[in-house]
Every structure is written in C-alpha cells, then in structure tokens.
Image (cartoon, rainbow, N blue to C red; front, side):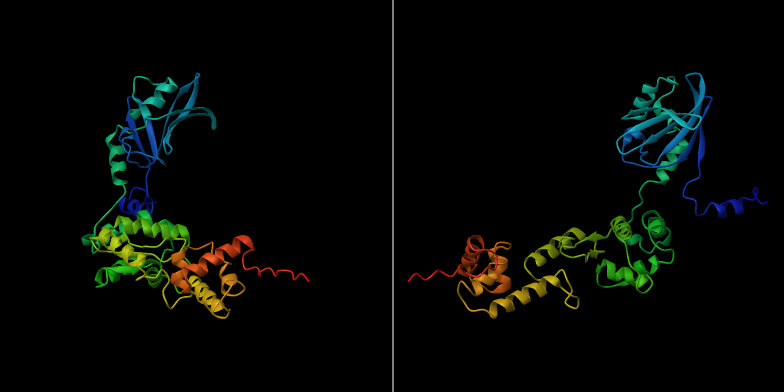
Length: 328
C-alpha cells in the first residue's frame, strides 16, 4: 500500500499543518495533538489551540486528562467514557495540575508535555513568522508567511507571488491595498473583512507599514508603504491629510461627502439672505458641524452660522420663520 514508503508519506503530509506527537513523562505518554503559541514565558510560549492528553485514573476509574490553554487560562479537564467529569483552571500549567491533586511527582509543565524537546521544537517552529523588505525575493520565506496569515482565508489561486514581485520592483513605495490586491484575483472578486484583515496582518509581518491617515469610518481605502522609514511616511501623510493636501476618496470615484457639500452650497446660493433664506437653510446642519467646517465647505460667515444655530434652537431645523400676527 506504500505506507512504508517515506516519499509517499512526505507527500501526504504536505498540506497537514501539524502531525500529533507523543512524548514520555516517566512511565506516562503525553499525546500532544495540537500546537498553539503565545508570548507567555511561564507557559513555555505555548498558547490557545495547544492541547495534550494522557491516560490516568480518577476516582479509581480510567480517565483521559486533557491539558489546554485559553486566552488567560490553563485548563485541565478529566473525561470518563467521553463525558466531562471535572475541570480545573489555573494561571500556569504547574498551578492547574496542583489543583487536580494527581501525579504530583511531576510538574504541570511536564504533564502538559511542554518540558520535552520535541514539543519545544514544535512551538518554536510555530512562532509567528516575520521578515523585512530584503527578504521579499526569498520565495520560501514569503510562502511561509502567506501560508500562516492568508492561505486559509482566501481562494487557492490568488497570485500572491505577483503581488510582492510587482510591489518590490515598483519605484513607488506606496500602494492602495484593495485595488492592488484586485490585480492578483479574478475579475469581479469580492473581498470579505476577514480576508482583508489577513492580508493586513501579513503586510505588517513582512515589514510594510499602514500609513492611512483617515479613519475607517471615513473611507475604506488603505495606503501601505514598503519604505523602511514607514513611521516617518505615516507622520508625513497624516500632516498632509490634516492640511487638506490629501483626500480619502479618489477623484474618479463617487464621494458622498463631496456631493453633500456641493449640493448644500448650491441650496444656499439659491436662497436670499436673511432669516427666512440662507439662515433657515443653514439651520438644518449648523449645529452638526464646527464653524471651520461650515466656513471652509460653504463659504459662509461667522454671523450667518451663529444666527442659523439660533434659528435651529428657537424655531427648528429648517423651519420657516414665524409670522407675527397683525393686530388691528
């Protein structure tokens, strides 16, 4: 059948991210069947998704002890006949195993399987990969990063190699993320938030910098630079944006904000000066924007803004002025 052929076994293992292993602790075998990592030294840098088990008795019955991590917890669960019998929670492997009262001649680190060199090597291999711009021509490094961050969250035929090749060879260090990604995906492909987030994580890991100066609420467009001085670029773009030299929406794309101000400015122009004209129209939005925003976008004076705000408070937003009754 070929199960003794190492070449066949290696081919079958290519797309498997982790192969379970068994480590020995005294006379007991710890079955480590998933690897997760963290930055916690007391956890030996293991983390969420890490799981190991061993067989031992509990209350005189054969049981399976499952050791695992959550975000801030170390957990040991005892199962009998596939049902959860007890659960213990601690802050470190040693602490949680002490709470079980079982196998006390071993440390919790050992019983998690974390003291063995095999497990240590596996955790080291799973440490979050990173690289710098000079590594972008190293396909092995980039593939490892792509597999870690993006592969499971996107389609199989995304030409990620072309993405980095084009960016690396470009004289322009800055890209707009989504439009650049579209060049390596099928025509009309729609990205989801999880997918874009995966790409952003990868770009951070390869040494790129998000220099987008506007908020996500204002615009979905993101600017990234491959420059080694990414933080300096970020500061420069932020200054340019605040001073009005950059726009969050390209001119060739629909801009609802620009359309709003243009239409409102036209509405003001079509009305006469005074309480029942420009002031009444401006009262619709006068309290929702600052003096500077109104002055810059509508070219109106401070007095008009002030009177429009009074109009909104005393009469109502855009309401016609009250006609004083004529007493004969």
